[in-house]
Length: 531
Ligand code: G4P
Image (cartoon, rainbow, N blue to C red; front, side):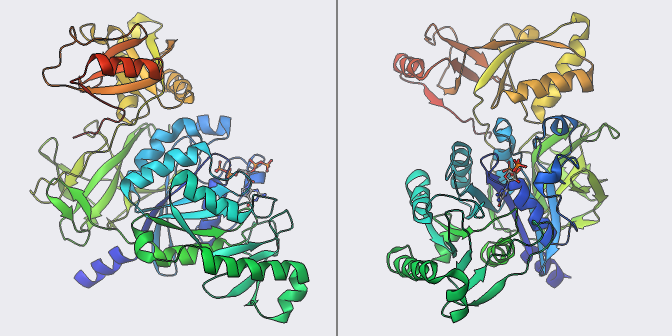
């Protein structure tokens, strides 16, 4: 029994894929599913528009816009591993959702467009991975097209993200004349073969680098250039060090092309070997071993009305230790209350299946009758373990929001509350004014549209929205905080968050500095860590 449990834990690999929009995250996810046998034919992203959405898209709004709004979790088996891909929205306006998903992942795969290098959104998401100290693997995508010089890309990882890198393979012909890759571990060349446009698994020619065949295949010049580059890499590059990889200090880099499937399988296999099974997690009782028998987990995502036909609200639990069994009773630590996890589900985008059992590393969804908050811990025994809170990330856009019809206030408040409990928006109020006037903060402006759409569609409330000029937020920590005595500038506003903590909104960085100078004993933070 115990042996089987340990085996299940150790074969789990749970990771998130992050990227700047358009770098190829959706395509790579699809290809991983293809290799895992979870789908038979990748609806190659090109044909996605014609044939509708990719496997990981499901919300109506998403179909309309053709972007991934919410994250889904995809599970499949490959070579004895049980893989959980925590899919994340590609659009940067929904990055907060991605930040939280990263809290539930054990490692991250960072997809980079070879022509664009490290982009804005990559930097933000990378910072969250760094904060968690999880291993980060890099997939440099779109090698079938002309891109930056690979040495330049490695340099960018180091100078922009501050992480050392180790190329696991090396591209041959990056000027639009892509020929294949050199596998540094096996000292082999793998020749690129465009195959069936990436819809099915690709076969390639593999062989020793010194084999004369490759001189012919690549041509004298390219072969010679490759030999020189290999020498340079071996001589001047960082050494490979798995310990550093596991601490997130060194990123193994793979070059490939998700669309044409080139390099996807070697990446997957090498990644699975290197990345970790679920590791111990920090809690208020110290580190909790995933192999302990006490079931524990935390909620990292809540989503209402995932499927209009179900009209329900699902809380997503990341299992951290012990075995989960359908119908088990657990303690809801924050509420100090026993609850039964009756209808646990797992998801493949829109498809749901009831789970009988699940293990550390897995994500399950449970029905939420309104009792869960993001960050809540569930625990089988009475040990009252509480995992470290999930930080609230700083919104960058703010608006005053009202119900058009004052008769609909009740539904308006309910809708706003539920959507904010999902973490899609943050809600603030003016001190002493109450809920008559609500201020909503979002990470990306598109979230305002989603809010408007959802309030109308799901709660029957039309809203008016007045955008505010604020761009920055700081949570204020000060002993004996007093609203009347706190000194502000003309272009800042003090509000309260959900927990009635004081928060200041600013139009510009200059005014943050001024307010800091005027309130020397206050600490101002751009992230509110929930405790
Ligand atoms: P995302 O989830 O990171 O936002 O990116 P996604 O996979 O949707 O890919 C974005 C675009 O990049 C897609 O094109 C996709 O076909 C293309 N792409 C992905 N991987 C590769 C690759 O390895 N090589 C090449 N050449 N392209 C790739 P699209 O949005 O459909 O636009 P279009 O190409 O049809 O104009």
